[in-house]
Amino acid sequence: MSDTLRIGLIGWGTVGSALGLLIAQGPVRVQIVALAVRDPSRGRATPLPAGVPLMSPPELIREAEIVVEVVGGVDAALDWARDSLTRGRAYVTANKALLATHGALLAELATGHGGALLASASVGGGAPMIELVAHLAATGRIERLRGVLNATTTFMLSAMARGNTYAQALQAAQDAGYAEADPTFDVEGRDAAQKLAILASVAWGGWRSESEVERQGIVGIRLEPGATVRLVAEATPERMTVRPMRLPPSSPLAGVSGVASGLVVELTDTDPHLLVGPGAGGRATAGALYADLARLSAGERPILFAPRHGAIG
Ligand code: NAP
Ligand code: HSE
Image (cartoon, helix red, strand yellow):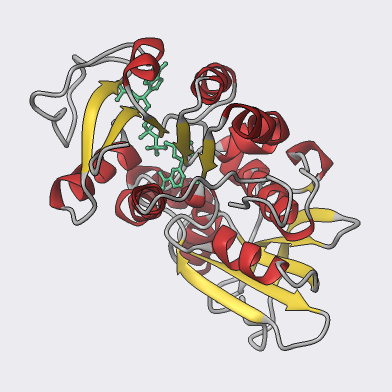
């Protein structure tokens, strides 16, 4: 591989265009050699980068050493990831829906074909939650994960506690680019469930699916003014749940508000670790993708969900 990473970028929306701006600024040497979008002719706040050839995703995957997918959804993304990893490419993505549905298959393909699978941006937005959990998992002493993992619902619940209606709060989260393309994934708890399944897979090994998470969202929720209610995701080795909970002021997660996400990692033999950071938004999320590119630039080939003591993401 040359000093400059040659990436194919699929998606130039909220996250993809923010990543484009980071790449233009450096310091990691990255060249976007191909770009794929759904509709090149549509108006956009950040114009498509000049001089970068537009291709279909299959053409782009043939062209680039590294494929960065910031589209979302499962079916088309699975085809792109499978094609990329079978060719030994590094696949870098923010797509938690894909990882919480087909993560085991993707890790197997990456392992079998010399590929790499990186997805820091899939959980925590800009907060490096996968990395924290992987680090703490090394000693095998993680007891419980407890997090506020979906920024859209945190943003909405914070706004509703200040008197906004549910509809106003959801519209504001969508306008800010925090919500999924289909916001039912946020408000019905699926986004949080996908992130929890990814973190639990890293914490205890053995890939876990979104479908194993017991889930309740925030649709139709009523809040009294000032109430601190959050959509809380919890996992132990035996059970994963997502549900709205009223948090007492003493809870370390009670201070997680606005666009933030937070994670508490409880260990069997030492004090818990708390990580809070911007959980959504183009710039913060693009920073996590950029950090994955920096790892590739340094010569790492991590594979998310690969067995511990081998290469782990
Ligand atoms: P977005 O703004 O809706 O952008 C999606 C991009 O994908 C658009 O550029 C769209 O093209 C392109 N696209 C859609 N279908 C395509 C296809 N068939 N072929 C090629 N390109 C296609 O989405 P986003 O908010 O950036 O989110 C992208 C991913 O990041 C999702 O997996 C999401 O879960 C994840 N994520 C988002 C955030 C956040 O704060 N937004 C945070 C963490 C993770 P057009 O531009 O032509 O429409
Ligand atoms: N829709 C997601 C959220 C984006 O609100 O947390 C970040 O993953």
